[in-house]
Every structure is written in C-alpha cells, then in structure tokens.
Image (tube, one colour):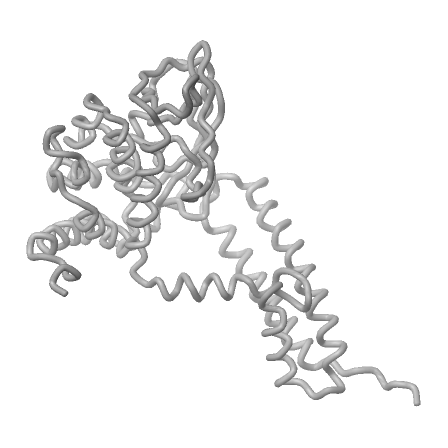
Length: 337
C-alpha cells in the first residue's frame, strides 16, 4: 500500500512546484493567455526546468538527467493541471525526451535535461496509442506537413518521425532551419498552444529507428496526461453533457432515448409527439447554427481571444432556455374524431 502513496521526496517536489506556480501563475495571469498579446511565460519554464530540475526528470543520469520515473513526472503534471500553467513540460520534458531516449539520442537529451532548450514531437496532438504515425517524407531534405503539433511554438528543436527506406525513423530539426515554417493556430485552450508545421526541403539529423520510440512516448504521455486533471469526474460529466443536442432520434444518438424518457416524465401524453418533433428540429438546427456561429467568429476575428466566444455561448444559452420554455408549453393539436 505504501507504494501507492507519494514519498517525502515526491511531496517536496510538489511543494516546490506549487509555490512557483502560486507566485508566477495565478489565475488572473494565466487567463491572459487568451489576450491578443499574451504574457511571456518563458521565465516560469526556465525556473521550473533548470532551477527545480524537472526538465530532466525522465532523462537518464548518464545524459545529465535525474533518472527519475513516471511518479515524479506525475507530481509535476498534477500541479500543472491544478493551475493550468502554460509551460511545455508535457511536450518537451515528457514526449520529446522519452522519444529521443528511446531512439538512442546522446546529443539533444543533455541540453533538454539541463533546461537550456525545449523540444516538441512533430505528431498531431490528437494522435492515439493505436493510431498509425505517418512520418514526413525524406528526399532532398524533409518534406511534408504536420498539423496541430503541441509545443512547436516554444520549441527550439523538433523531433520528427520520418518515413525512411527501412521504416519509421526519428530525426531532429532546429526550428531556425531554412524551409521550416511553424504556424500557430487558434485553439480552445490557449495555454497549450498548437501549430501547423510545414517542411520544405529541411535539413535534419537522423537519430535512430522511430517506431518503438514514438510508441514509448505516446504510452508515457497518455498516462501522464491523465494526472493533469485534478477533477476527472468533471471531464466525464462534460463528455456526457456534450452529447446532448447532437445526433438523431430526438437529440444525441445514444443519449436520445435517455432524453426522450426524461421528457416523457415531464409531459402528459397529449404533448409528447409535438415536443419530440420540435426537440429534434431544434437539436439539428442548433448543430448548424452553433457551427456557423463559431466559424464566423474565427473568420472575422481570428486572434480576438476568448471574448467573442463568451458572447456566442451566452447567446446559445439564451436560445436553449427559450427553446426549453417553448417546448414545455407546446400542446398537441386537437385530433379529428
């Protein structure tokens, strides 16, 4: 049972990280990540990476790291999730470092462990454990495009899966290299910035075989990402509530029968048919209008931050309340005898 509890050393690490975030990442400062000109959090990462040594937690001691394990990294992830601190720990100290160590790198990992540079793994953030990783092509330099790369905006080095003659390989590329273009994209969570990365004949350094290395980082990253949620029950609730209002059969696909059963408890039989019909129509129109509204915000104000989406949410909320009131007041028309 004692193995399930954090040790005194791990709790001391937690206290140090928590104090740093309390001083440098209070909620009002983190919220400014959505501003048109967000604050610079690079000094926070430098203190966390170099002074507290978390950048090298998962790097072996032979390469200048701490030689620690997932437990220590989980402590840092929990504190990052507690404050939503905009630091590239997951993208650099976990994903990129684990992949490079697994591929046999001995040059980039020491610099990462010392906190002197940051790195990002050039795979889409949405990549799941069982998704095939398609590398960029190798010809006269690296060529291809990778979308939604986490940490690429802040990175000094990209760790790139490349489709080589003998299968997937792992290469490193400086973000200052000619032919490399990193384009930030607008995301819902601006504390975890994503970017599209395009390679046009970019010079690279081959590290080693990539399949096992990418698999290792995806497994480690997926496990540690779960620790960044301090309220996992809210994620489950959000997933359930997110289903309502989408799909067919009254509303939300598998949740349709549940919603219809709830309406049946509220409504007398004389009202149910028309309410079900209107509820379905509102659900489908809400999907279209919501998508159009969100797209319009992004089209007319691509870097306006969160403020326009707050107004869109309030308008959607008002529409939902009005629709609910109208639904409950609907009556079936008289049926011919």
